[in-house]
Image 1: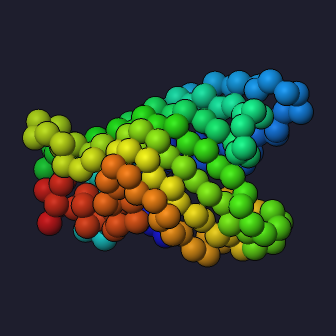
Image 2: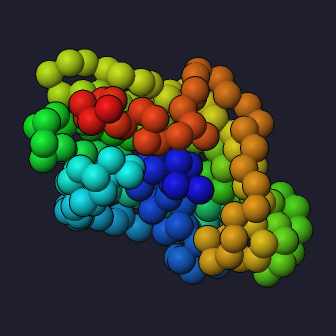
Amino acid sequence: MRGLRLHTGTLVVAAAALLAAIPVASAGNPDVQHFTFGPFVTTDDDFCGTGTSVTETFHAHTTVWNDPNQPVDARNHSVGDDVFTSAVTGVTVVNHASFSFTDSLISGDPNGVNTHEWTFKGAAMVTRVVGSGVLERDVGNLVVHTTWSGPEFDSELIDTEVIRDAGGHPRFLADFCATMIPALGLG
């Protein structure tokens, strides 16, 4: 699901996947860890099938509560920027995120088919074209159910369903390329 991965942002997926990789602490008080990602710079020479080169620069930091002392399996707070620059047009688009995220297993076997509830609070994604202002805002409270064929992030994502959208997240499951191609002046 390229649109889901990219529009929700590298940060969202990295932060959520990070939760799955960290062992859960057994103590009653939360074990807090801090992580910094990047900057990672990659160039896609055929961005969204346009045949045009676009450079992506990603940087983020995340605070993770391994045993969050609340009725969730994992919790984090993430802040980051995913910046895309077209080599042809010189246009730069910034996807900025600053949000709290929780993840709870709500049904199934963690090693078989299972469903997780993801909750995002804050600015899950604010997209702006440098020099032109805000293009899109996905902010507020978003609750999503994700169903996996096996362990979360280590198996196929079967389904994604938005359960509650309070604040406006119109592009959460939308096509990333449909937004980014015109924003970068490529279409």
